[in-house]
Image 1 (spheres, rainbow, N blue to C red):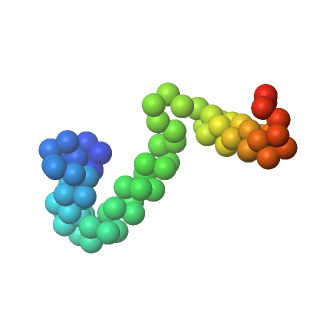
Image 2: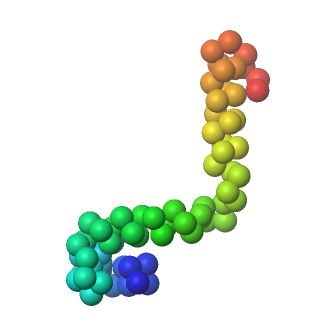
Amino acid sequence: MVFEHQGEYDSQWAAIGSIAGKFGCTPETLRNWVRQAKGNLGPQDGQTREEPERVKALARSWARSESRGISDV
């Protein structure tokens, strides 16, 4: 419900504050549920689940190369 209606408010927090009472919970509880739901949706913007891990691995590889003075990865 927050995702569907947040465009009607100045911020996501404003939407959460308004909607929380309808669920009979505090805004902080609803904010935690929203964060969990967003995480359950998985990566956004066409990103696969493997891509963030691949980027981290490449960054680690680059950092190791830099520390050894290797300029090409």
